[in-house]
Amino acid sequence: MPMFVDTSPPGQCIFCKLVAGEIPASKVFEDEETIAFMDLGQLNPGHTLIAIKRHADNLLDLTPDEAAAAMRTAHRVAHAVKKAFNPPGLTLLQCNGKEGDQTVFHFHMHVVPRWGDDGIGLSWPRKDPTRELLEQYAAQLRAAIEPA
Image (cartoon, rainbow, N blue to C red; front, side, top):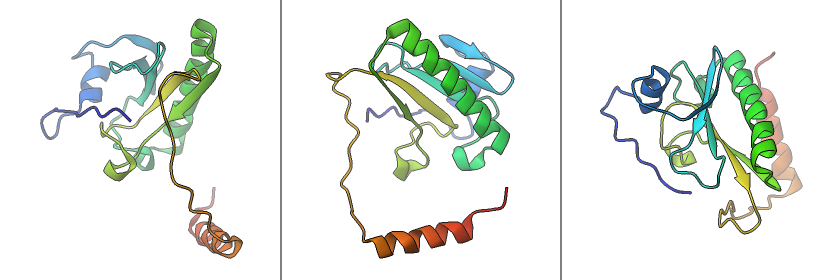
């Protein structure tokens, strides 16, 4: 994954500045809760970022309504990417925390048009746990899920 390093001073957020209109952006879509704009580090033509307007560091800091708004905007932009660029594939990417490869600590997700020979790789080593271990993990998650 290409690494963009946000050089904003501590306490300042580059995406908050973008939302406030303090820095330029090539906007694609905007509503009350979200903004969609072209990624400066285009992986492929049409690569778009979807951000929540309110500052939230990552997915876990969003309200359920904000999370839904982000996905609605991503869905809308994905359809526009398909119509405008006609890629045979599409990748949605959303990273959380330094260890999750997040480089700008303001919730956002990538909508990336994909072609078979575009040089983008998303791969990881499979762990192949046993069915018993998967059941243990599932039990841990069931116990941790908050009621709707």
